Amino acid sequence: MPFPVHAFKITEPPEGAKLAAGTTITARVDLGRDTGVVTVRYYWYGEQDEVLVEQDDSTATGSIVAPVALIGSIEQEPAFGGPLNVPHDIIGPMRLLAVAEISRGRLGTRSVFDEVIVTITPPAALTAIDFETDKPLQLGRAGQSSAFGHVDSMGKVFELPVVGEFADRVTRHINSPASGTSYTSSNSTVIKVLRDGLLQIVGNGKAIITVSNRGKQASLDVDVNVNEEPNEPPIADSGTNRSVKAGSRVKLSGLKSRDPEGEALYYSWSQVRGSKVALLDANNSEASFLAPTVSEPRTYRFKLRVTDKKGADSLPALVEVTVEP
Image (cartoon, rainbow, N blue to C red):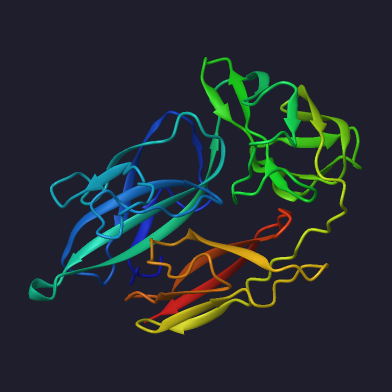
């Protein structure tokens, strides 16, 4: 006999489900103890994608807006669920986030959420791999900049935009090793392969990056011409996982991040799990947010990247904060 569900929960698709890209499934939720639910919004995110704001969120000014995959109401069948389109152009792990808006009468509304990770599989065979970049890729030319606003330099970490062309004529992003992609570098003294499909500039010269997935391969010539000065990349430290009470002010600390040469660091915090919270001081060593009201313990995950003054990047560091009622 299954245990009764006391918290708002996604029941379909279940955690760990394998779903075919481009298909339509039925989304279902159990409201648990939560009463007064008005709507449930569903969002698809990649496993490490930043949680983005909603279109009608008052904090959305200047932010990227997340598309809503489904809005469920009580009139639908099943209630607060319904037909949900599985992304057609993504493969690998995806997070399905369901956010329920609860009416509290004159007190306004509050929200609760649940999240599951599923695996999206392609419905057709991979026929070719390509790179959405210049060929050959020139790194170090004036004007090229990284995500952190620094020109290409020794120690910079970057991600190649890799796509797969499938037999159903859909082009899908396959950057992540979780999609089955592996990377090799012909010259690890120029370009080094890091975890999670990230690449790092470690020297000047030429290298060939080879990408493999589902028996197919493609190669990209890379020519690096950056500053000669050696520069060790910094190390991000996002602190330890912890639990907090709802309503408390939570501080995220990157103060233990360090640079081997002692350079000052630039910080970039982002949220990669849980319903969106207003993250203050996201470009400082210490960021903070107000722990939301929850019915049951819920996990929020944050990612920290640091960059030194010469443009070398760290690998991302993750920290989880569990908010308890």
